[in-house]
Length: 280
Image (cartoon, rainbow, N blue to C red):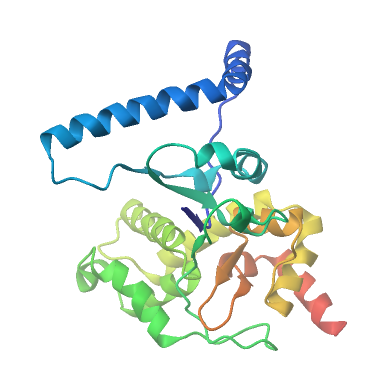
């Protein structure tokens, strides 16, 4: 089973030469490794059954955080090694970056239909508008995640700040928590008793600056096209935009894409969007 969702960049260490040789050796012996693992799983299940005779379902293994591997690694893993990933004698759930679902390789040929984890839809989808309205139910769902974790009236200067956080998140839970955490830290370092609008704005700006550092100038026109068309290009640039969280996927009655609200604040994006809409 494959579960796909938007991931984020993570730190990768360069393997030493000995490690690289070990990987090559492991690839050569992948068949033997697979057989040995299956022997272990079979023996473990026999022992489990002897202790719990009523147990019939076997093992479930979940490989989490694979949604954070770079797109080229994900393609190699889930396309080139799809058979090996499914050849273990147990039920397995793999997470995968959503970019792999947008690959030209049809994963349904190797896996069951992937379960997509979309963003919480905080928008009222309108195909022809570049700046679309927010959906109150979606915003309420996102703000409730903060309300369940803190005493809102004691922490925030006003409840409107929760809505501001929800809008800045784009429905992406990890981004919501990152911005909220930065706002809490900012308020604390400024000796404030409560989080203020200035703290929220500062936290969002820091997230914006992180994106500005990673987005090359030539990509802004492609991002503007996503904002106009509500669809990401089915190529390497499109997959990069999804993996890097510059663009989110939403689905339900429709499947559509929209630019991360923090990215939409970047001046270079705004200029690219003006150019794209003036040419329509």
